[in-house]
Image (cartoon, rainbow, N blue to C red; front, side):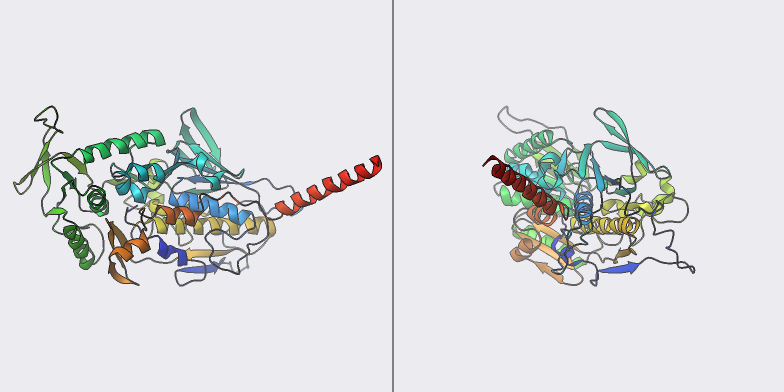
Length: 490
């Protein structure tokens, strides 16, 4: 997921808006529900005791948490947290559910903020919150497991997860895979535990502060540009040089030339040096001239130019889709790049090669969909996956005809934080830049509080509809009993 994600635009993507469609279930000529949409499980009866639906979510980042929290909102019969419809009061119908979130990390990490975390210990500490410290997750319907997904068996609906205590086997009714991409440092932290991550960022920060000969950032993609800009903003005394092998910044992104040109202008306005069209072909071993001096590196470029610097950050984008490592027959489920092929409803494409494809969903960076990978899009997709699964549950429990929402095609767009400024481009808004653009897209923390508040991570999960009324009735009965006892005693 690009570190330069615009988040605010997805708040408008609600059902029945121009960015989404609500669709009924396709029916056969006999009027039966289409097999590719309807759940394969039996229809629940109202009078029968209901066992919770088991939903397994692989990945606890933007898409995974969005799916988990919105799904529990739906199953509590309440208005879901992403709804902006003032008339939306939820269904009022409760559905038992047990959600399990599996993630290699011990907490939610604000990946968008990685460039800022590398230059500020204060923000590094804020951006990683352990799952046990997220108020929204402290509800009986949600459990988190720190571990790595090894295999998924779509036919038996079971997954094998490796944890520190050994392998566990998890069965499920519905699965949402939101494992994203495997990213190399510094695009993402190396560590899987918060304490080690903080040590990692502290080490980089010390290297930046001690860089008397400056810092060289290699790679002119979104992450490299933002790392250079954040170092420059927070440590203006440190010279920063950005090296990119192509003659245009953001060369791998399908964005207008004007967007890249404006980003380059802002870098130069902030006194960040740039070298374009040159590859780094060699980095020398660190050399320490004097005992009190920070080690120096010599970089040799393809143009023959050499650079001497105190600290090197290699931000050349390297990422790998994670799904092929654990899905059965990835050649059938994924495209040739490893992204999961999905329907607009976020279900696995059902071409007959994947058992129970209709009960398997993918959201976020792991899914193949149009547009640039962004946190806002991931949260939006997680929300839609949750809504469509809930519609299936409602159909099975209450017999209501399901109404599914579909993703709309997305044109490339991006927001890029550049120190105190930012540049943004979306076809609907055109090119924008400046301090107001940064405030609009990122505020002062690279979008952390925008995501945190939008997902309501710091707010305890409300109880299911009717729970408060039942509690009130129980309290009233206790009070009435106490009054009667007092009368008898008198």
